[in-house]
Length: 76
Image 1 (cartoon, rainbow, N blue to C red):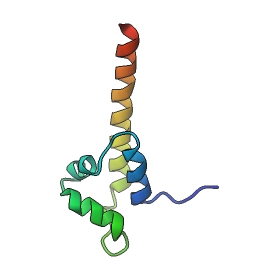
Image 2: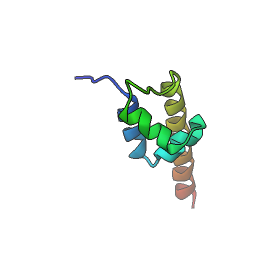
Image 3: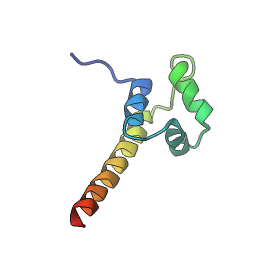
Image 4: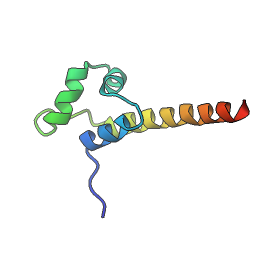
């Protein structure tokens, strides 16, 4: 059973790995309040069309950082 991924659900999932709405806002070059509005008023005030790519890049970067940290922990 697959649900459509929305900006809100995607940003919620990023939060579980430590990527905050502030991080998302910074990447888009907007204020945190703007991101909150995108989440709340998606239909009336939708996020930019590039939101999927931007959030995917944030997830990839965090993944790379975590992998490097795991390797560092194992090396010592």
